[in-house]
Every structure is written in C-alpha cells, then in structure tokens.
Image (cartoon, rainbow, N blue to C red; front, side, top):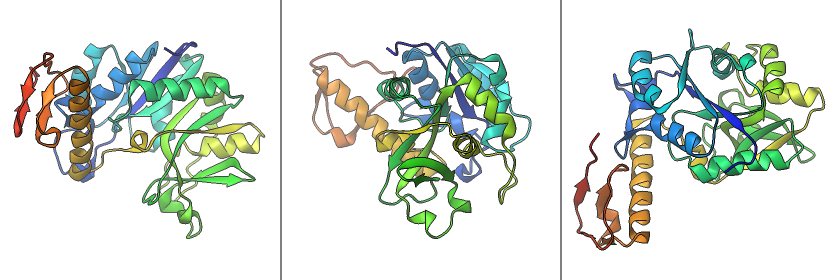
Length: 284
C-alpha cells in the first residue's frame, strides 16, 4: 500500500465516437467487466481514499455502473477538453495528493498505481507526469525536454514535424498535490487548434514558474487506451491472458492458454483442467 493518503480523479466523460456504438465507451466490457470499473477497482485496491469520476456522455448508465463501487460522479457540462474535465471534479474541495487517471485505460493495475504515487512521493517534484517510451508514438502527446528536464507536453495534432520524432509520450496520467492543481488549473487557456482546455498546459505553466516537473516512467500497458473496437479487442486479449496466467500460477491446468478465455469474475479451483476453445463467462 501507498504510505501517504491520496485521492483519484478519473476522466470518463467522452462519447467515444470512434467506437461506433450506442454504448458509452467506458462501459464497453473488457473480459466481462466494463472498462471504467476495472480502473476504479484498481484505484480502490491501491488505497485511494476517494475516487471522483467525471461523467458526461451516457451519464445515467455510467453512474449506475460505478456508484455501487463507491465512486462519486461529477458531470462535465460540455466537452471542452481535459482541463475542463478535471475542473468539473471540483478539485478545489480536495486536499493532499491527487492522481488523475483515464477511464478508458483498463490495463492499469494496482501495482502500477502504487508505484506512480510512491515515485512521486520520493521525488521533490511539484507535478509528476507518467510517461512511456514507444517506438511508434502515433497520436500520443510528446514529452518535450530541455537539458534533460520535462519542459512541455505537445499534443500530436499540434506537434511540429520535429516534435513528432520524440518517442517519450504522455500517458495522460498525472500526480500532484491538490494545491498545485488548484493553482494552475484556472490559468489554462484554450490556445490550441481545437479551442479546448488542455490539462497538459499545467506542465508549461509550472515550468514557467520554475517548479519541478518530474517524468515518472511506466510500462507500456499503462498508456494503452481504448478508442476503437480494434483497441478494445487488444486490451481484452491482454486481460484474458493475464487471467489465464494467474490461474496457472494458482495450480489450474490450461492445455492451450492462447485458446482459453476466462472472464475476470470467474473462479477456477486448483487442479482444474481447462481444454482449448472454451469460454468461461461470469455471473454479470
């Protein structure tokens, strides 16, 4: 467990247009569990004292899925960017350490969250931005450094040709103290091509004030978000693989791990034998 108390804000208001589905994106199931539930469960199991979820599209359905888990919902009235989404969670009523997560990153695990917060506590940084290095960064925001230190985050759609060559990317996960968040959040302006309020701008604002911004490295799966059905299939496959691996560690005999699917809520007893081409569905 993390030694210092912390709270979590989960961003989950997006429509998910590229999913081409009437179901809100964050409610699409990953191994039998809505992806937003997996994020909240990981946050809770990591020791978060409070989990606030920013909702918008499909609010009623999302609330029904996550409020029983103990999460508190806050509505984002308009889709005006990530900084506006965080502002919707009323961080001015928060104190201590705040971890900002994404509701469409279902591969993040308890150990990942605990390491992120612990690494931030061990640093002297005012803001920690979680980064991953990728061979093909694609549409991820790039981490711009100056003399080795984090200088800014440039969104891919606003990046220059040179910036696009950077392989260290922003996962969209941040950790900072509430007073720092509340100091810089009101200063974010929509100075970009989309006229949106980018949360990434708090990095540049902090750097301008000579505040320390630390990059906290994480494994690649932490950055894996879901925006399309193809990406949903990828994270589902990885989640099934993790489940099978845990079952085998617990003494379950799996004849062909690549052709065996067990949903997250299913329990399998030690010594059980799972044959290929089977799918075990949970009660939900």
